[in-house]
Image 1 (cartoon, protein in one colour):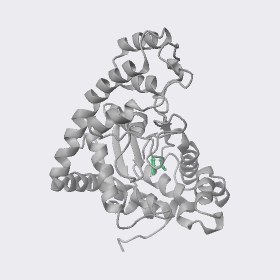
Image 2 (image 1 turned 120 degrees about the vertical axis):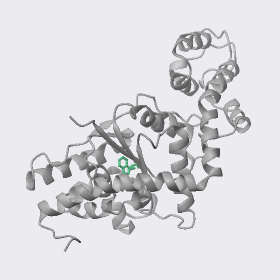
Image 3 (image 1 turned 180 degrees about the horizontal axis):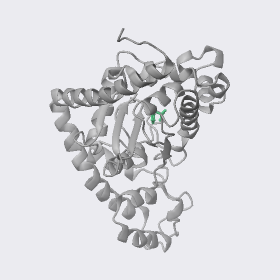
Image 4 (image 1 turned 90 degrees about the vertical axis):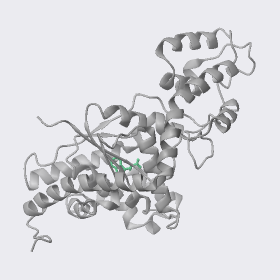
Length: 333
Ligand code: TRP
C-alpha cells in the first residue's frame, strides 16, 4: 500500500510570520515523517487579485526560503513552484467541466475578496475559478490529505465534489477524495491582540526576525486585557502569549507558567522572557538556514528545479490518464 500523500500550498506573500509558522508550516514539517509530501508556492493563485508583477519573483523565492528554513526537507519532500508545473492549469480546465457555476458562486472567499477590491462583477474570472485551480493542485498528485487552515474547508469540499463527479463520469476511484488535516495549534493572534496575526496589519513577528527586533515586539505584545497590573491574576487560557508557549515551550513547563500567571506570582514580563528563550531555540536554526540559502541562490534554484522535475513526472502521468479518460487527444499527436 502506497504511503498517504499530502499536497499543500501557500500564496507568495514573502517571508512567513510566526502565526503562519506555528499554525501551518510547523505542521507540514511534522507531517513529513508519515506522508509523501508535495509543498508548493502557488504563484498562479496570487495573480487572481491585483498584485505587483515586479515584486512577485522575489516573493516566491522568499516563501520557498521560509518553507526550507522552517524545516521542509527537500530530500524527503517535493518542494516546487506551481507555475513550474504547467500541468496544474491544464487539469484545472478539465476539472472546470465537472464543477458547477453555482458551486463557485457560493464560495465565501470569492465573495470576501471580490468585495475588498470593489464590486463582484469587476472581480477577475480567475478569482472566480480560483478553487478549481486549487482542486487541480491537489488532485493532480492524487493527494489523500491536505493540511490547511479552517478558512479552506469550503475549497476542499469543492475539490472533493470535483473528484467525485469526475470519478462517477469517467472512472470509479480514479481520484481520491482529499481530506483536510487541521493543525492542533490554536490560532495565533497579532501583537495587538485584536485580530489574527497578519503582515498587512503590521501586528506580526517575522518567522526569521532577528533577536533584537523580536524582543522589542514581544515586549510590547498584548497579553490578557484584564491584567493591567502585575498583582492581578491572569488568565493563561485567554492569553496569546500562552498559546505561543503551548506551541514552543517544553510541555512540563506549561502548567508551571500557567500557575505563575493565575496566582500573579510573576508578571507578564517574566512570561515574555521565557517565551523569548523558547522562540530563540526554535528560530535561531531557521535564521541560519535562511542565511545559507540567501548566500547561495544557485542552491535554491537547484532545490526548486529538482522539486519541479519530481512533481512534473507525477503530474504528467495523471494528466495523460485524464486526457485518455476524457477523450482528449492532447499534445502526443
Ligand atoms: N487557497 C489556499 C490558501 O489561500 C492556497 C492553496 C492553493 C492551497 N492551492 C492549494 C492550499 C492546494 C492547499 C492545497 O491558503
